View (tube, rainbow, N blue to C red):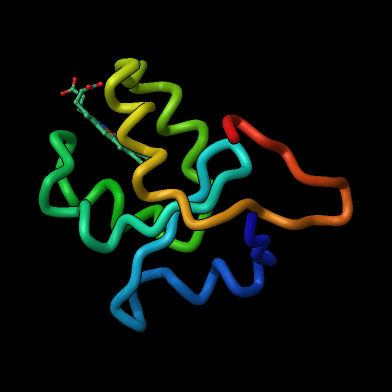
Amino acid sequence: MKTYSWQEIAKHNGSNGSYWLVIHGSVHDLTNFLEEHPGGEEILMNLAGKDASECFDDIGHSYDAKTLCKKFKIGVVFNDRGINLFYQ
Ligand code: HEM
């Protein structure tokens, strides 16, 4: 599984055309999902390059939504406190 630093993740905030969001330690490339997101693209665009775990949980996303997340997973966050895995 590939690991990414926050420094690298922060670059994918939309300014270079790609949108990465971190949810519970997993890094997701949501660039091709923005338009499809039932909750709208703006909410995702605003959190690109950042940790979106709190927002994701607050919505109470369905099991299907959580499963869908896996499709967009590209790796995990690496930090010096270890790797926090939400799912494999
Ligand atoms: C991989 C990431 C995500 C996926 C696959 C995803 C998928 C979905 C899906 C399938 C729904 C429809 C409702 C459901 O099935 O629960 C939904 C609704 C929604 N999502 Fe997401 N979502 C993601 C991330 C996020 C994040 C990070 C936020 C917050 C910034 C967010 C905010 C919302 C909102 C506001 C709704 C609408 C809820 C409603 O209408 O009641 N989503 N999302």
